[in-house]
Image (cartoon, rainbow, N blue to C red; front, side):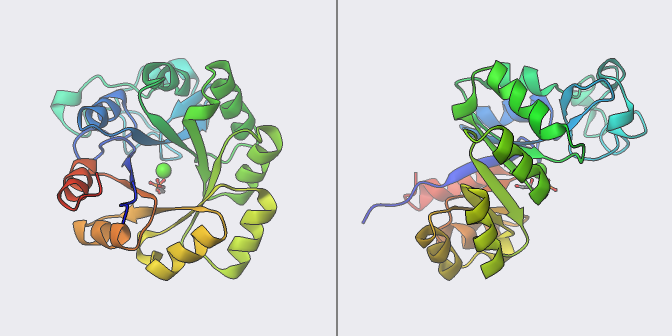
Length: 244
Ligand code: G3P
Ligand code: CA
């Protein structure tokens, strides 16, 4: 019997150990031998794609207000590390372009279209194309409309739909959209669901892994991967169970 490989995807970087969606958190993930990074993108008021999860900068920087109301220069002036811990003071909100350039050839970038701007999908695809990284990025989103925009504009990019659960209707729509992955919440991942997704031709990868118990459940269900804040623990588990 061959053991499946499981994608260990550092969620917003190794975000249990460093400030999420910063170069520090991404570098930490690579130091843990992780080769998949998840990140979130939104757009600035002057049209640049930046890497940040929330709609506002309040939680993860020393600034305030909507991401989309800041220019890139204003966002770059903010401290995106101190909230997590003083060793990370001075970390900046990265641009998507600098993340692509930094990790080209070193990690696969699972890029979640998080913002709601209609231009976001196209602008994100343009940056990926400029860097020639179409083979090194997977686009994900909870927003069906953003995935539809991406499929229409950049059909060469693999796409995954983040959903809470997978219904028959989800599968029908995912086929119609030409998606590559379905990404259910970890609590919804069962061996039967994974078998169904594989039979339908989808990659099955989970999100929302908050405990090691859930992490193990997702692996045992046969999923192809998961986003996780503590990728080192997943790697250790996979090694000790002959998955790696
Ligand atoms: O893997 C997807 C996951 O990142 C979705 O949740 O809130 O972290 O964007 P969130
Ligand atoms: Ca995300």
